[in-house]
Length: 263
Image 1 (cartoon, rainbow, N blue to C red):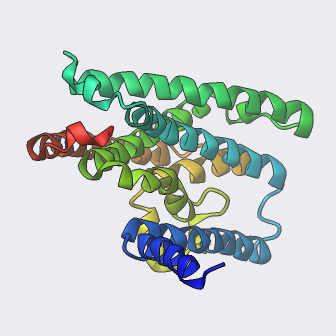
Image 2: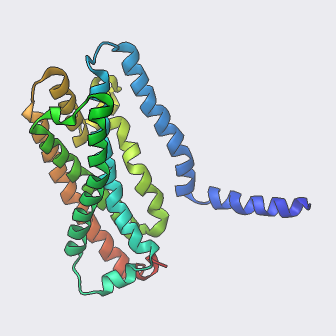
Image 3: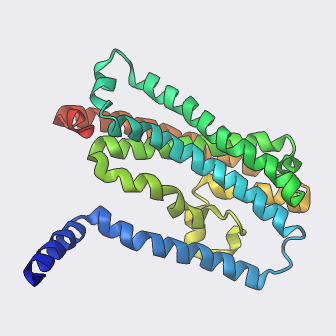
């Protein structure tokens, strides 16, 4: 056993990590997000232990809504990444197909992927826990629709990054939803966040969606302002995401990096 060979292999991996900002960020990112998210959840339940009359029902309902959002977003990214992993990316843009057609096809396929995972989860909650997400009533459709739009928007944002920066942007595809989770106020009201975080949260449609879901379940009341604000913000972010996708595609085409993305 030679120390110089061990040291040489160590240096290879050490420089691979330290010279790549996405890799360093990935190492810091996950522990920080986990601690932040569960810290806010712990603080909330420690100081508001009687907030939920039906804690299991509210938490499980919010968990299902969040899972739908996560699967929609990651489903869109996965479909895009599949084209890169299968080395079909170049063929995709050589074919006589418009960018709008690619985006629309991915949007509908991502919905099917999300529903395949969501429906069994919804069916299991009733016999296992005596809880039905259908208790949200007709408004459930608007909450799911808003989450679907935001999930697709995030997917387009990440796909724009993949177009612009290539597969090195792949880690962002997995981490985007977890970054937004503390600000989405999935399991706790927005008031539990520090003032600065609240300002960020109110700029996202998530906080209005989950606040409304809890309001319906806990207070049996509907605030249509929350639903409208969520759709309004979703519309703004979706327009920005699509514009960014076209911009990233144009930049990648001009730089000639499109042909190398799938390699």
